[in-house]
Amino acid sequence: MTGNSLATYTRARRSKVATPHVTLKAGKFRRESFTRYVSRNHPLYVMLIPCILFFIVFKYVPIMGSIIAFQDYKIFEGILKSEWVGFKWFEQLFSYPQFTRLIGNTLLISFYQLIFSFPAPIILAVLLNEIRSSGFKRTIQTIVYLPHFLSWTIIFGFVYMLLSPQTGMINGLIADMGFEKIHFLQNNEYIRSIIVGSGVWKEMGWSSIIFLAAIAGINPSLYEAARIDGASRWKQFLHVTFPGVLAAVVILLLLKIGHLLDLGFEQIYIFLTPANFSVADVLDTYTYRIGIKNGQYSLTTAIGFFKSIIGFSLLVVANRMSKWLTGEGLY
Image 1 (cartoon, rainbow, N blue to C red):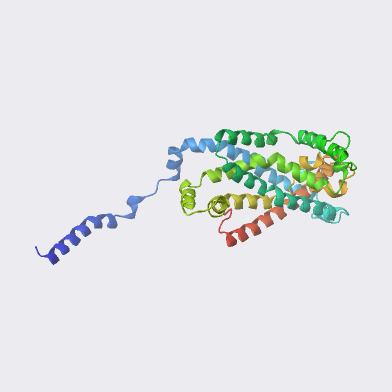
Image 2: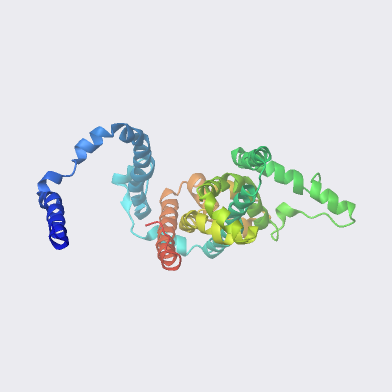
């Protein structure tokens, strides 16, 4: 058999073998039905049931209660019988003389949290990752995780013990140096910094867990290659660690932006006093006063509706900008 005939014979044999796979009818490759798939993987779907029920009961069902923002809601008449008033409560909120102060304080404290509280767990995670002794690393992690499990009342007690003009340790040091004691918790110049700083101390360790997990998922061979190329610790962070955690940073930053007007009632309320009211009163504390104390449920619902619209809008805009700049986003 000549070379040309051998090549022709080989191509013919290959075509005969490959042809049946190409010409099989599409019907023989039918996808598995959804019911059959769920039946085969039912343990996974059973595990999802509590999560699904949680979101239905505590997230989606309460959304229907948002309609009272457009009603003069009476608790004894219920949603169905309360009078519809349209945008009355939104107009009252925007015309409230102190609305500018409330929204200004909320945005300013939230901006401080975004600048200082958000990067803190990232920095902590990077520093913990550089610790080579596993025992010392676990000890540090335990210490920085602990404040997360303390209530804000206890946190306020610690802050008071540090800053009190009568018994505070810091004021004691100030007095020993010959200076006049400072009323930190009543001083408008310091209260925002104290609120943000206490939040950083309380949640920094716990929030770093996500970034530690992202760093642990980076391929160690990338660090080895960087060291072989002579990269310093700083260069390894810039070119290996930071790109490895960028996706987690972007997602959490977008979620933080979506909750820009949600500062957390407990954190603010525990530090709120008549002396610092003008700079520390925010939408959450105002909602508590008029909603819980005065029973204006429709107005407080309107405030919540307003915050949700602003948060959703910011999230959509920030997500598009993130995808345009970094290629990462929530969807």
